[in-house]
Length: 230
Image (cartoon, rainbow, N blue to C red; front, side, top):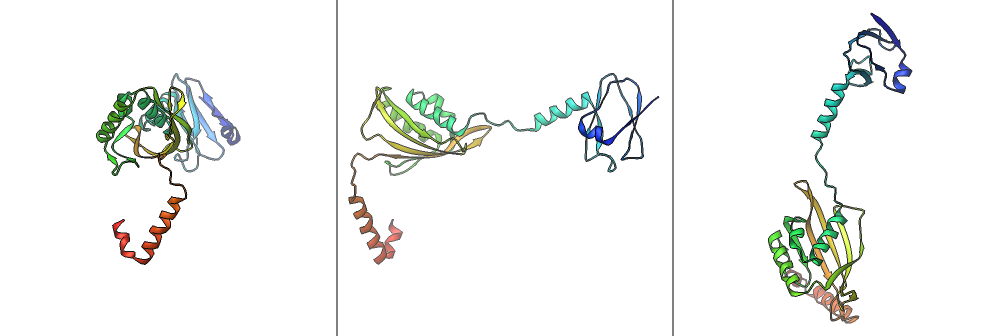
């Protein structure tokens, strides 16, 4: 029988491997009771373990046990989507530019809400949104393309985009816009759950808009009940 004494500092510095196929008695100075381990042909490793004997910070793991624990940890960890939020949004614009709704469909959640502010009501649900974009791409040629000017990529759950349209590489009039997308992980995939488009108006009222806002504010201050009609 081989009796080995291992000091505590050496154990804390690195794992100790005992490749011998024999019966080994380990005596830790912090624990007066010996730990007896019967090794097999494979190497065994001593690793820190706060759940072991309260007087000891170590447990013995065989290579098979380490492999089993690692496999279990991998199996229990949910698969995270590899696409970032900005990546999903870029794919969305790429699919619209290519008139490929098949590639866009899986980027939109079933219960997504899409607001285009030139329309009186939002499009609710993947089916309604795809029908809208089908009408859109059937109304234009592939020569008219969305061009992303800037896109945020710090947050995968909220993405802001500024863009414009180009016709054969030339800027299209009154086509600047900005959009916001909220994304979530649905069934292991990052999908768009909400979107809002704000497009440059063809008629620009300028300071007249300030006059209109001031007039509406004046009415609301004097007739508060009008708020319910907004």
